[in-house]
Length: 126
Image (cartoon, rainbow, N blue to C red; front, side, top):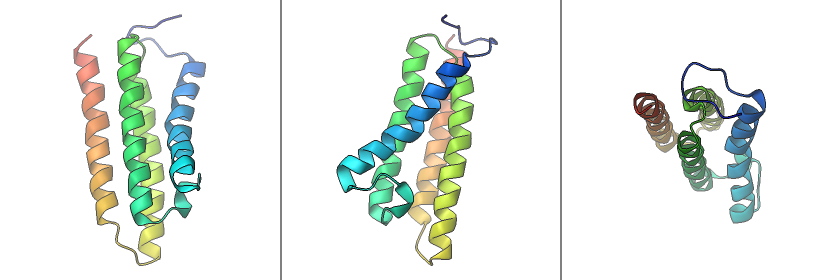
């Protein structure tokens, strides 16, 4: 059943598929590009590429959901939570190993602004 982007609760299966795609597709891309699917084993520049792919997939999924009139705001909130977890874990790992994390912090802020903006834009355009 298709839901409008209003107050209806999304199908849990759809939410699971979106979040799984959001987490797994960048890992598969990293595996193809760098031979390592677990992002915490990637070196700094490789992780930044992984994170850019992660951002692009998130925007693509949200735009696809908007096009299909599905619950974009709920998925965007889940994506924001998952982004915090992944980025803060990697920032902590870099900080503990005395590595520079400035670029990742900037990418995290850009990603959060982008996801928040997409969620607001799609909520207004309904």
